Length: 354
Image (cartoon, rainbow, N blue to C red; front, side, top):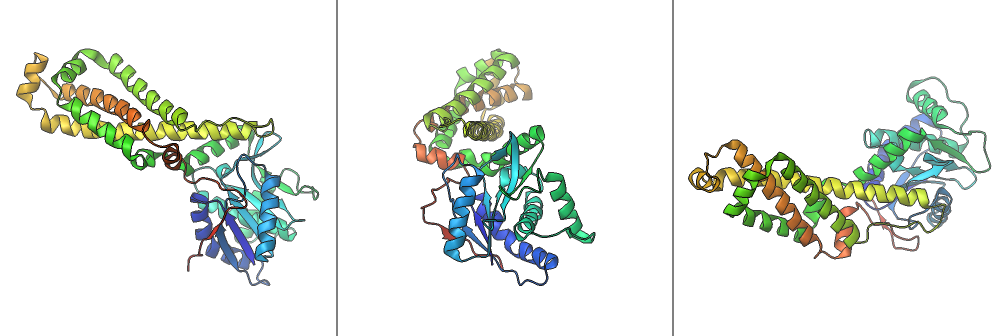
């Protein structure tokens, strides 16, 4: 029995989808064994944490479930010698850890499957593979990633290149948070933004300001509105973390950068949606005779674009005010795809797909 222990959220969904494919792939690699793969949802540890803590927590769960092997799929970024760690296999414990952020944002499922098969091979003490099919591809990938395959004391670590690996890890963390869904989850901020946009749309003074501001001022107002909203969310909900030790400093830095990237992308997505709505509203509701009278010159499509630009900026500022009314818990749930739980937290089983 092979257990997949996945962090709540995107990792759990990925683990549930991997069960059948992983069992099939392992059956091809080791047909002498009847493979059963089961996925469960468990946060195991409270970040920041290292692979040693994850290995210990995974081992405890393996013993409780009476599994033969276990692989932990975590959204916690790991590192070794300042290099991002993709996976850590500990044959002594019979457990392995797969860090999903290090896989990047593209082809995540395929990479997770290949790397998990390699980790299981490392746990089983598999010998040198033959040159046939996927097995050769997986083995070649593992040889490229292995830092020190002969190290049997601390296990086998699989790392990515320092620069590209850290960037890929950061992108993977931001993607896991699904930042484009941030505004939808914050009902008060979204309501305040729409209300501010409607008020600006029917105010002639706003029409005239949009006409005289010019592209430079409109750009400055747009940047300021996005920055104000992002800062309100991060500071107001205390999303910025501080390192509790030197060991966790880089991991906390990655979390903070991922948080900032998530919030900024989420606010930009909100801004883009508000701009589209404002442009439609300006074209449909702001009639040309009134618009021309307010501006003092014939109104064209460019004037409607400038009006929509200013309205979306003001609406985003309104969203920042609405975000200040959100509870810290609501903002955290909106900003993160999951909230890691402690190892003693109750976990829920994720059924494998049929």
